[in-house]
Amino acid sequence: MATILIVEDMAVFREPIAMAIEHQGHKAVQAANGQEGLVAVSQHHPQLVLLDVAMPVMDGLEFLKALRADEAHTKTPVILLTAVGERDYVVRAAKLGARDYLLKSSFSLQELMERIEHHLSGKGEVEHTPGQAPKPEGAAPTPKSKPAPAPGAFSPDNPNAISEAPVTKSVADHPALQGIDLDGPDYRSHERRVESLKQLTPILSRTEVKQYIDACEEVHGFSPSLMSLLKTIRNPNCTIDLIVKLASSDHGLALKLLKLANSAAFARGEPVDSVRKAIVRIGMGKLRDTALALGVVEHFSSERYGGLVHLGEFWEHSISCGLISAHLATAVGNIDPDAAFTMGLLHDLGRLVMIQQLGDHYDQVMEMSRLTRLPLEQVEGRMLLFTHADVLDRALHTWQFPRNIISPVVFHHLSANNLRIHARKYLTESTILVLANRLSHAMLLGSSGNDFIYPTEELCDILKIDESVIQEIEHSVPEHTTDLKLSLLNSKPEWTWATLRDRLMEKMDPEACPIFVSAKPTMNAVRMLCGRLSGEQDQLSEPNIVIGHVANPAELNAFLRDVEKCEKSEGIIQPLPVVLISSKGMIKLNDRQQEKRKWTQLPQPLDPWALVEAINDILSPEPIEVDG
Image (cartoon, rainbow, N blue to C red; front, side):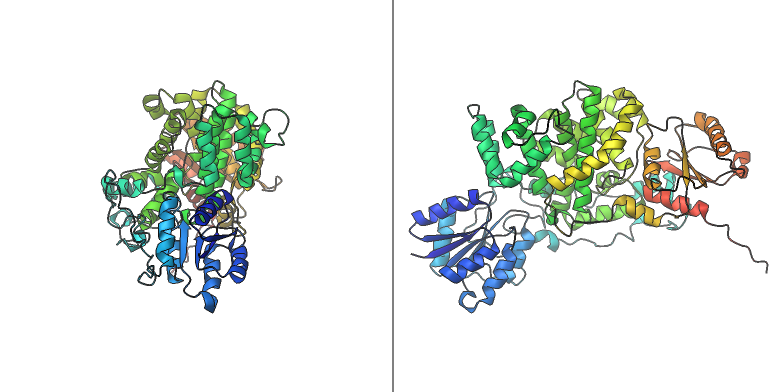
């Protein structure tokens, strides 16, 4: 009989393993985190350790370091219990002498017992190169029904493969970047964008991208408590008592259900104070999708998914988009606000899947988007032949979300005209999500890695919403987003960050005091952006720049008259400089208009960083010419 230590924070996962070990005739000792595990080591001197990686208080790697520092346990076999995406942990654990690993999402108790006996017999010494993960002996081959992984693709047998793939780290020499004056206005022009986009070529084939993406963890890779809850909900004979019991057994899930039920997305009536009341408010018919969405957020909140996207900002944007979608659904009517919240919460998740599965390949895409000033989804489509919406379409089908959530997510980057053509069956739901995404970006609520500001007026017209709806969203959603993100995210001490607004304000001329002029300012996304950038401006300061939005050339003369009215009402004699924003930046000014005041133009979709640069440029003093 051997003593086997199980270090795993999830009781619903740990206890069945302990029972199986004892049934096999061994002694099982349980610990809920690495710190408890070290105490158990000193008391029980185990002959083998089963070790979870991600745990509170002390994680698996810290435990393993401490275990190896003990001379009595320098060679004690350790089998990792890990998720597919934790390949970096597996590699680091291999350096510390971990012998083996099993994927939580796929191993059976019988397989686990076979591995344990194998290592206890002394046959488990596995030679491996330092820095390379140990390969489980007897690992099952990839099912033939699945395509073989692309070269360098991550798989359970090759957890470090993506970092080994030959990828060009720098994109600075790409033809799309040649001939650009990085300090000149041409860099921000629509023509430059079009030319750069034409120069982009695929770095992977569609087949290769599919193979990478198909390696993504499926829903059964989520926590055992969530899996048990989802399985029970699918049973038509399940009772609410059983569901409440299962949800309450996972304190983290229970708290999130309570917070969500009391949030602006679900709150109707008095606050709820129990899991039962939260489930009743959410509704049994929607509980599966809601619980699954919470599991997705938890699963994809791990730092391994971040890459070049800050996860805190990513989920802040997603949560705000969910809240705005719920507001819009309530205002429009006939659309379930709870489903609207879910589609808003998940709409950009495909980007995290691409970051995790494509590794350095996706880093190239993000870097190219930044350097060319092109919207990220356009660069994705050119360099990968898939966008993050296409990827999430596949994932949501795998996770069995309903069609009324999947379709709007697929269409969330379409224009108003294209929505009418391609999203006719789910036009209202899709328009709600597109508008919510654009409003969230305009209000600078988080960042999904793509910060461009798109027009909103025509989408408001499709939904037939009035100014009061937009005003209520601007007033309430920022605070509700802050409250909900603290509840839903696995926040860590290091998850504090300078917001996108803070970073933009830091770059902008502190003397800038803009006024915004357009035909429909309340419904205008650029006006919302300008409001966020000047929200703390001293109200007594005199405006020194006009930010204008003109939808088409026919509006130009009316816009100029409105600018002059604003100047007159403010008592401004000298014509103010204007940053004019229009579709593709194609508004033509005549000589007299250009002589009267300083102008610069920017295309829409609008890069907020380009707006800050344009404000700084136009407010900078004229260079002094020195004679001779």
